[in-house]
Length: 65
Image 1: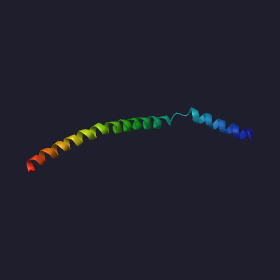
Image 2: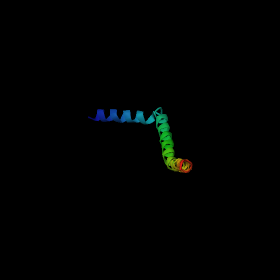
Image 3: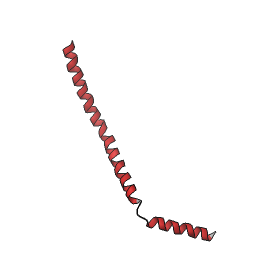
């Protein structure tokens, strides 16, 4: 039983020292930050587009009637 625990601890130490997986985590965090910023900015962008289409609709409606 103790040898299995020691083997597990040895594997955990090896995993802890390895650094090649850190790049993936850093890229994932950057992508998540960009996605969060894009989502937060969409509300203002959507409001601006809605206002522009409303103005176009009003202008076209005044020419039709």
